[in-house]
Image (cartoon, rainbow, N blue to C red; front, side):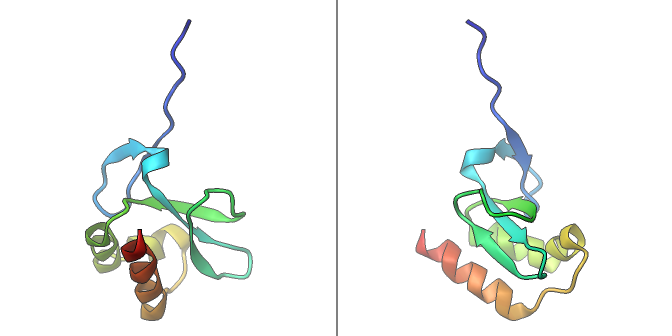
Length: 88
C-alpha cells in the first residue's frame, strides 16, 4: 500500500513547514473579520501559525498576517488570539 501524503503548511511566524494538523488556522471571512479557526473548516482566506505565542509575536512584529490578508489588523485582535492560544 502506498503511504498517504501528509499535508504540510508553512507557519507565518517561524517560517517552518509543519504538519497541517499541528498548526492553528487564522481566517479572514468575507466581512473582514479575523479569527482563529481551531477546527479548520471556517470559510474564508486562511493562514497557518504554530500553536505558540512566540510565533504569533514574530508574525505580528513582521506584519505577516497583515500581508497575508491584505488588510490592517487591530492590536485587539492580536490580544484575543494570544488569549485563545494561551488556553490550549
